[in-house]
Amino acid sequence: MDAEMKDVILEYVREEYLDEDSGIEVDENTPLITGGLVDSFSLVSLLMFLRQKYNANIPDQEAIPETFDTVTNIMKLVERYRQDK
Amino acid sequence: MVYSKEAQEFFSKELKEIEEQGLFKEERYIHSPQSADIEVEYPAGAELSAVINMCANNYLGLSSHPEVLQAAHDGLEERGYGMSSVRFICGTQDIHRELEEKLSDFLGTEDTILFSSCMDANAAVFEAILGKEDIVICDRLNHASIIDGIRLASSQQDSYKHLDMKHLEKKLQLHQDKRFRVIATDGVFSMDGDIAPLDAICDLADKYDAMVMLDDSHATGFMGRTGRGSHEHCGVMGRIDLLTTTLGKALGGASGGCISGRKELIEMYRQRGRPYLFSNSVPPVIISAAGRVIDLLSRTTERRDQLEENTRYFREKMTSAGFDIRPGVHPIVPIMLYNAKLAQDVARDMYAEGIYVIGFSFPVVPKGQARIRVQLSAGHKQKHLDKAISAFIKVGKKYDILHKSKEEIIEKYGM
Image (tube, rainbow over all chains, first blue to last red; front, top):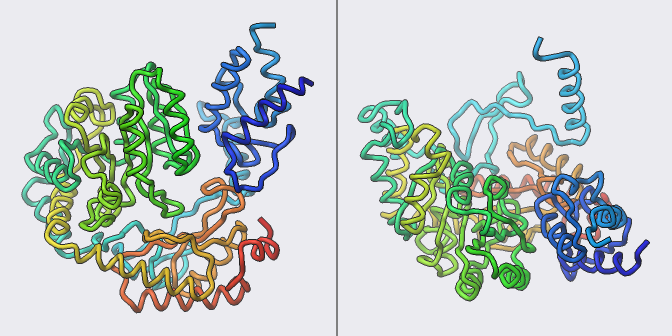
């Protein structure tokens, strides 16, 4: 697992979706969508971030709970769609 | 056979799952006009119960007001029942245009276009004017109809944390490369009763060259000193570019909605707004009654003043009784219970006490934030409020939630 990528995505998720005083802990296995932290509408900003940061052309239809619910799964998707590899 | 056994089994299973998740919605049959006192058949087939309604959007108590009913009768007599047409073919009467002009005056905007509902207005508001080179930046707790409206448009979309102006500013900076930026927000958020900081939003819009779209459905008619809405409350009348609102809440509560705002944009909706072009005109009965509502509200602030007083009284009494109430000034009063089952149990017991309220839980509100949402009305008299407060205290004692912190309630009942 790419530790640096994990940290970058986790930091983005914390900054983008959690309130400073929420007290919610998030790690690479925290369910983001089914756990109620990120709704399908707000997910768009994470998708945009991944596309830009990793040049990964992840299609919209992949951003669903089955494939996009945890940072671990998100990293697998990034690896699959990265165009610079 | 088109409706196959496979399809039938699939949908039966889906419905069962909805039921198992506790999300199955049931209708309760009301046998009286909408009002503070109603007669309800619940469950279906049961004897009628006389209950106090504390969950309607009837903020000003105008749903069954005699003057509004008379205006509806006048509309029916003088302009008929239906228009049998969309607006631009042969569905526009003089009173449609008159109501649009009255709404523009009332809301302090340049022009207004009517729709069958605010849901329809929100379906048009982005789609008709924005393209793929534009972006809508939206508060994350916006009403579903705004979210759906954004999804219908070909423009790009982004969102900011609820009421977080620093996050909004970051997003505006990020999207300076877009042709047009639109900030979309509810004026009042329907589950919390909190109010968007429209002054700060308009300042950011000026700074970063963005338009402001406001859905004021839970504010038109009573927020602000003369009831014009949350833009009056926040001191930004004239600075909102697009305002959508409904006739289905404070303004008589029948149905219908509108977009009000900059005149070129409103003309664009007449040319390209699909729900305007492809659905029937709002019927004359509603147009006539809504016009009378605007006249009433322009004549006196008595009803919004009464609502303000009812809100202050109820919030104060419930807070001192020991309920965990989200602070605010809006007649939406969320009574926080955190646990979904507790919210359902309290609502059920309140109904048995003659008070009709509803419990809300995930996914309508975030997980672990289940609540009872009380909605006050100018139509509530002191006796209604006192009876409701007494019932809440009785039920609150039963569940031992009075004078308990959020942590204590969660410890006792779980998230």
